[in-house]
Length: 282
Image (cartoon, rainbow, N blue to C red):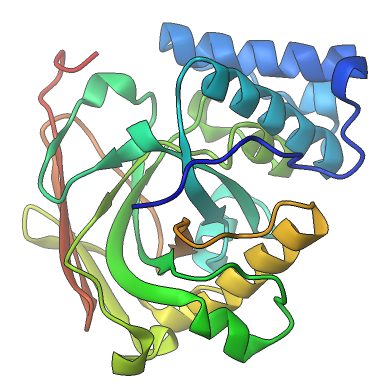
């Protein structure tokens, strides 16, 4: 599921070989945090608090290095689509990151807690595309590009200590990505409306988050259209085979070693994320 492809610019005006020193330093700081498992200081001191272009350049540099090391790109993730999550992290706009093949776990498969630094879970709708999206202004074309939708749990993570992030910190850090889990076998869009889904997320049977499709930019398809338009603008349109995590349907919740997180997204069905006990999976 999901097509691998070459890395293309993740921000306008990417300077290539003339990558500036502050972007290199920001990438190095985030890479070191991921490598050592020790969260770092924010990178906004290097990139500035509002320079989104510099932040996406940093994200692309880190993406290139992961691809060079053997990772495959299988799609994108949209972040910060829910007002509740925006309030939680103190930002006011969506962003996007890259999905790599090693980020995906099967429904109910144990996730090694040791590969995550500060994980938080959020439930969302995932879309698998069967067509390229070359015109994001055409709502019918965006909808028609979707083959199937799935219930998903995204385990977001931050390399920045204590989640002290602004918009440039999270963008540079691949939209605070961690891992994700898909549930079910997929449902076509002629069977339901993404805006009408109802989500309940629980830990060991106790409800910890809830929401609806309307919480995701009014409709998860709106989030997909936003991403598609942004991708077209940046010269790397969404393609058939891409997997897209469309964004949270409710507040994100911290998870810990040994947790069992379940989400029911009606009518898409359930999805479960299991986490190894402390000390395992590093």
